[in-house]
Length: 212
Image (cartoon, rainbow, N blue to C red):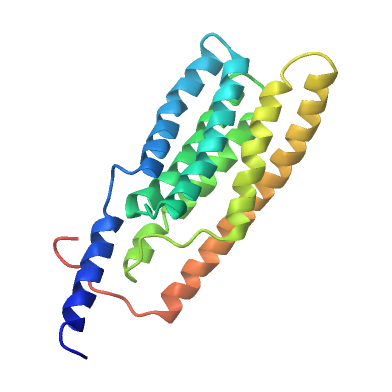
């Protein structure tokens, strides 16, 4: 290796690590704003039942969900924290919506239980992943498709909680998205579990250091 190249390579790696650990980036701020909207959504739905404002909040959340990923790539502000915040915000919004709609009797409780139950089962696989040096599996297309369907389904079901042509149509399309989303969500969960099984079989167990 030519003189100085090793130092340049080390500096580049250090720079990558520093950028990966950044917290106060534009995409992360958008993700923090999305997370702050979760309790606000629940209050709007369960308190004053201001469904119009709740739907607007969900729409804004959907826009920021797209923007944070786009800006992270555009501005070169990807970070380890951002890769965690984005899926966490998605799941918290889904959880908040199903709890709110179940308490309003818009959806049955079995729907509200099935969605977080899948995530709970997958979280139970994380300790096994850590024995192989992984903290999580990469999100694949099926999981993204399931989340897409659910994030469209629940606003439509909320809009469908009323009388008239528009609420009726919203309810029909909302349940169509919800059924597909629920099926894909669990199918993605089964595939994640299968990936974990293969990973455990194909890789050697790693020793965990005392400091984690």
